[in-house]
Length: 122
Image (cartoon, rainbow, N blue to C red):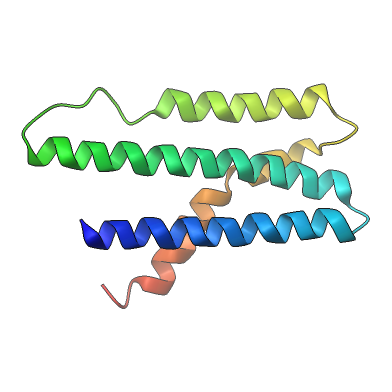
């Protein structure tokens, strides 16, 4: 379980770095709607990552104690993605829609890159 906690901490750290980079891009580049869209999508992606990690930890604990778990929050993660798209469509002058969708994939990209960098240590 400690290995999983380290993976969680690493992934959250990389998501914070990504969010900081997106804020910096929004603040200093002329492509503010694109970076704001990426930021909105990445923020909700970070929420989805946190939710998924929490549900998987609870699933692991329940499995070790021979209990059952209702689910891993797939509907909630899909609903947050829909919320991001609705916000982007409501405020089209501030958010670039394609950037929001790309930002929603940020957590999965971070998970994949974290795996690639740390697969040799496992």
